[in-house]
Image 1 (cartoon, one colour):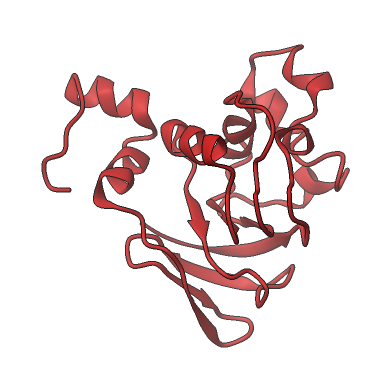
Image 2 (cartoon, one colour):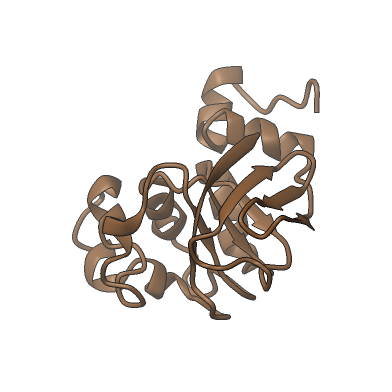
Length: 169
């Protein structure tokens, strides 16, 4: 899995799921395309208007803490963000993101700035900051997670294989 795009950075730790998608929206609709329009709205009201499909969201430690609901990673996925890069992720958010098909990358984000152009190879665990001319080592994802992400998430993976398929992982 390889991606390239522009960085949208939230230079904060502990960005919780209510910052990702406010409760005032997540209980009013199940339409993820509509929820996507409000992702990160409390931290940056113009966020959705700034992003282009394939861009990256970048943050600090413990991204996705708080609620265990899947709306947060699903709403991010529906913005067409390629991946979220953070120093660390809340465990339940991490699991929900992989299950819903949203790529996450744990790496040192301190040398990534808003507007930087990145190239990301998830399976090798390499983040190339083209703007700054540096390479950042990331934790590569296991083959099974890559397979689930390529299939569009865990439910899509199960539909495709009529069960869990580890062949080739």
